[in-house]
Structures are given as C-alpha cells and as structure tokens.
Image (cartoon, rainbow, N blue to C red; front, side):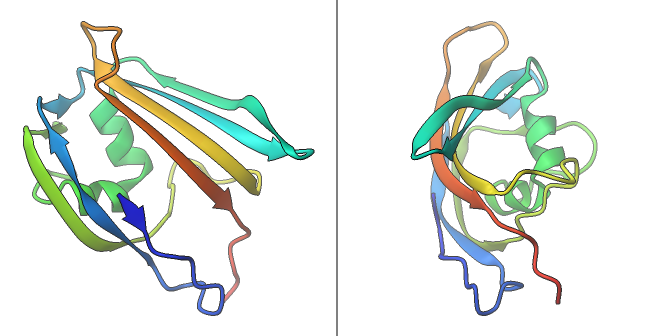
Length: 141
C-alpha cells in the first residue's frame, strides 16, 4: 500500500492510497490486533510510546477507528452489523480522509507504527505491517 504525499498548500485535499491486499483467510472479529507506536524524540526512537491491544475484535476495531481506510480497502464489506471480509484480493486506488473518530487528540510528532494481526486460536501473526508517519496540527479552513 502506498499513500500520496500530503499537500501542505491544500491541507484539505485527501491523500490517495494505492495498492492491493490479499486475504488468505476471512478477516473478522475472531482476529486479534496489536499495535505499537514508537515516537521520534531527541534524535532517537522511543519504543512503545503507545501500545494498543485488541484481543478479539480486529475487524470491528479497524472499521470503527479508521472508517475511511476500511471503506477504501474493503469495498463491498458492510459498514454496519457483523464485520467480516472474505478471502480474496482487494485492489484500491481511492482518496482517504485520515480521520480517527474515536481518537480525538493525539500528540503531534514523527511515529513508527508496528501492527500485527492474527486469528484468535493462534499466537502467530498472519499480518505484520510497519508504517512511518507524522501527525500534524489540523488546519483551520
């Protein structure tokens, strides 16, 4: 997955994500998720600045916390009711609003995110993602 560059001259313009995701098994609420965010400070990474664990509601957690990204990646999967994405290849090339409705305030900064997800009956991760990102102040337009 790749995101377009942030346009600081037009901060309300949505970034576009492009890529594909192949699911070999159903992604639903039997999945767990573990997210660790390291923050850049004093010219080094501070490990585990934020750690979030979702022991059994991986799909609903993703849908509730990053709805625009969920909608872009899993086209056709319901935004209400039971959360389940069937196995298959998901191709996306859509603009995304990086709004997090359940996280109202987050410290600005440079972060390195590690996301692992897997099935409830296994401690092994079936998905591992690493993302470098920056949180910036929301512009007033």
